[in-house]
Image 1: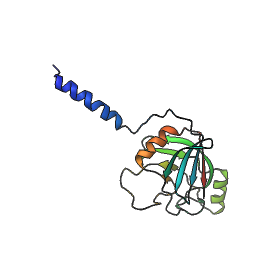
Image 2: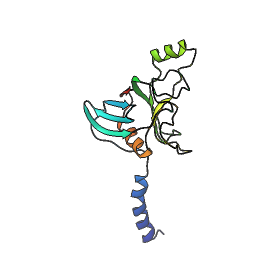
Image 3: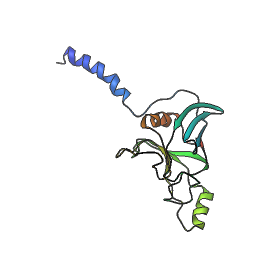
Image 4: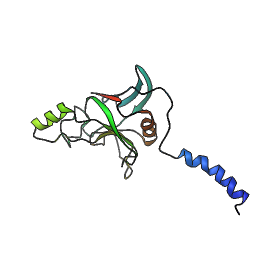
Length: 164
């Protein structure tokens, strides 16, 4: 027979367990664009011209300039879309960016290199905590709690504009 104490304890713990989920719900205005300003290290979730949320970001370890090829440590610049999601990312959660586009591919090919891919907005790594800024291989990184909100708010197909 289950004791009264066990039932009360279960009722107290259940809401806390629900709060620990990395999957959040969002019922606000649609995010119509993600705007990233590399020099300012800021990312904005926009509903048309209105800022819904703003975040400090980390970038690729060579943050100045447009990504030209795989391994250059740069974060791409230009207009892309959010094209996939990874709930089991090594970086907490992640949203894929549609890099490389045709022009990116052609530039890398002209350099005799691969354009690469796997550029994401993601949280912090699960295996280690980076020291300092701009530690990714070209991705955009935020804190894990922030990534949970971003993951809930931004849908696949949303435009992401990345500015120098």
